[in-house]
Image 1 (cartoon, rainbow, N blue to C red):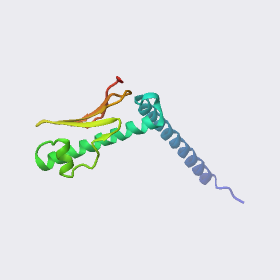
Image 2 (cartoon, rainbow, N blue to C red):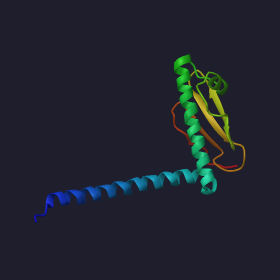
Image 3 (tube, rainbow, N blue to C red):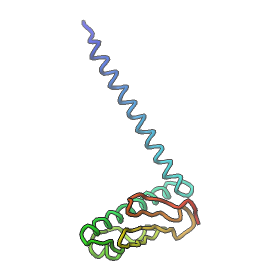
Length: 137
């Protein structure tokens, strides 16, 4: 019986590479969870999910603004985006309420928290980067 040393080493290397890749992925995931939970008051699961949902809504509204601008040649209000079917996002995700300020040169979509907690505001503008206030009410 002959042992295929090259094939065995190849399988061992493949297993080691898979384990290393999984370790790196878990590390990155844990850092992202820490970032999101640091922004949510108390870091509870409901707050984290709510903040993630608000961020996704802001990105969706910003993408709708870009599409609206490409078609209409200007940025639109929240009402215009909804009525023209560029947007299906609701106007709020309690305890956050959305507001859009549009001008000829750009836009800013703001989510403002209506209850105590943090972050008090999250926003996105034409740079497409979600930002948040560090204070809580």
